[in-house]
Length: 123
Image (cartoon, rainbow, N blue to C red; front, side, top):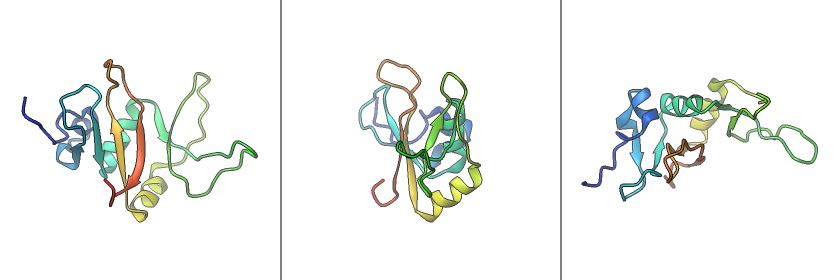
């Protein structure tokens, strides 16, 4: 199969009808491909399909929220997750010129929660 660098294989991109807004990072055809996007709908579709939401990062020492640190958090078994709204998350995401790197599946085909925020210059 030819190397397809589009986001066509990304379920989140398909769900958000934004396949052209996603770049496939992995050169080989693998289940564990990673993708990069700046499209808000793709990011939200990927996160919500996994129970993820924008969540503040807390310090392990004093449990205070570290201002301005972006991340996608996932509910644990008890359902606990401190959440913030998508709007301020995406505002900061755009202001900082970030890109979202994510994986749909692990190498064994399981649903992946791997994601990271990177500078658009590095994407």
